[in-house]
Image (cartoon, rainbow over all chains, first blue to last red; front, side, top):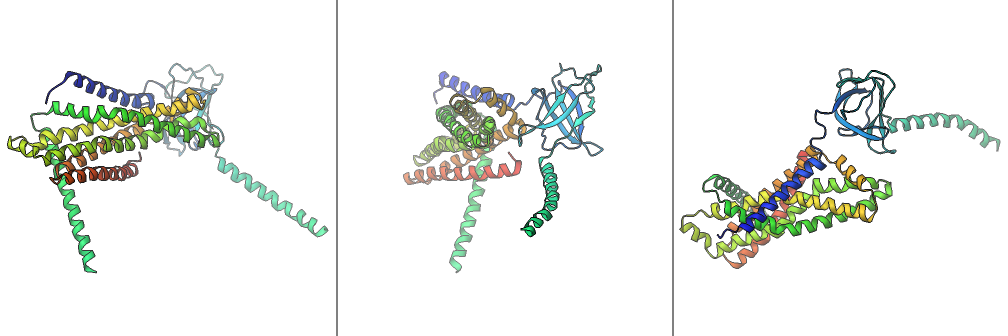
Length: 165
Length: 258
């Protein structure tokens, strides 16, 4: 079969374009190398993380400064969450980490509120002040339970009204 | 009462025999792949025919599919006030599902049928016998480059389809519906994970490439040497490959959760 250098060149371009697309999808969109070991690693233990997932964002005042690197169960049966943050951040030791929800039913993420202490958190340190996730279902359950109790109190008065009429 | 059972048994035996022949054909291709001389020139020719010539249809369909997901997704998400997640919806559905599957179906129709017809015509016109007479193994010279090119081309085309789809969704969501460009891309980048989504997408495309490559060349190679035989072989390539793609897609998703 006759060889044509133009055709070889076009095939080369096609393969390069395909590989570039794979690379972009892996690195740009898939975020393969984002959570490398270069970031500032901090640990926080929560009683309840709700639906927090790996790679969820970590924010300070709403600005993204890192993401969740790992979630594991600690020896004391609490959730041990590893955060990887921008290494340039200087966080005081009395920083508070809280798990919050975007909107009412949105995704969970971690919000940090820096404190005022002079001592800074070193890589690998544990954040002592934490606020666990609020589970909407449990709150609703409590709310319904409470109104149920209130309802049973109301019932007699309703009966009284009925008898009065 | 006995005849239908008899027929069922005969059909089952034929099916298993056919599977066995397909597996042996696949093994032949794998053996021919390693045997020198390497047919690099033939392989590049097939890359051009299967890959470059499929590029336009893949890009066009990618944009159209991405745009329609963007439109449907936007109209659905806006009801829940979640239009900001449009990037995640478009990206995940394209990367995990539509990119590999639709690309495989399009390539089956565009290139798989052509591969079968080409090999089938060679069978009818006794060109393969001509090769054998010159002691050139037709599996080595004709079949293997086509099958390998199909396997190599599928992940590349699938990824390009996905990227063009994401672009199509971007045009609809950002340019026409007025979402924020940064929100679209951030929601896409936050939702997509390399191990679960992108690697799964490439795995699917690779498996589909193997399926289409094997089925198209096998059906061509076993064409009945008549003109009706070529027509039947081409039809059955498209039908069998399409069904296999969709069935295997379910099993890959179920087994690996991609």
